[in-house]
Length: 279
Ligand code: BEZ
Ligand code: FE
Image 1 (cartoon, helix red, strand yellow):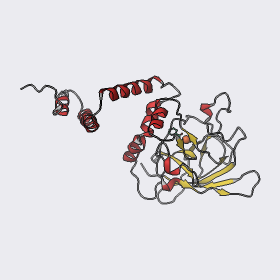
Image 2 (tube, rainbow, N blue to C red):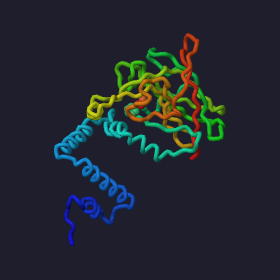
Image 3 (cartoon, rainbow, N blue to C red):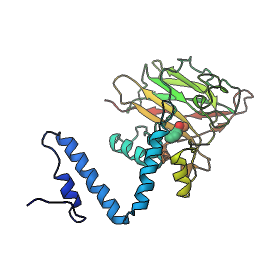
Image 4 (cartoon, rainbow, N blue to C red):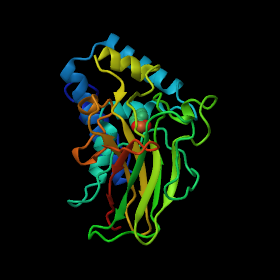
């Protein structure tokens, strides 16, 4: 007997249409998506007016996307989905440095700088020395690791958000370790900032009674031949947004020391070692 659509059998009816030419993985993912999507609508008894708002929201989310702006990733981030997918795909042994959210502000091919060089080019903010080692799980230094770093400036903006105001490559750089595995650079003690909240995701956050702020952090992308890529941040420990990061990126192990220095040129020091896992 033909099975026509009904509320009771909605999942089975839709999933029965899966073609025979699809891949097993596509069939698995799509049938699960249909199952959970239908369960969601049934659980909340979604009204037609609410679904119309949902469609309008998704439409606006797509329309605001451009080469510089990815609102769907932002949506995934604020729903904790980016962190969940990252956690599922980066289960690591104890001691290995944990991943966190990549974010939209990384720029490829930042200048390769000499060890100790200052990445803060706009003269704003409290200077901070970031230093430590890139190590394997046995504590051996990793030679030739690339430590790619980026942060917002003292006003809470990345250079790419203010191309007419900030110098190009402000608060960015790549540092290549030697045989001692050491990295060191000067930047600024990071400041907390709001994620872009002038679009549909920002409006959604406001309607959910949530703020858009991220606690102050320095981004690190650490790569080395033979090791898994590490995408992470270090966080400033006394930040008021540590327990309410808009994108759920904070992990206890990523909260770094920020020690006050007496040096007139460098006000802070933040030591942190990175432990990579072998491929
Ligand atoms: C960031 O830390 O740069 C970031 C992460 C997720 C969304 C927006 C910004
Ligand atoms: Fe950031």
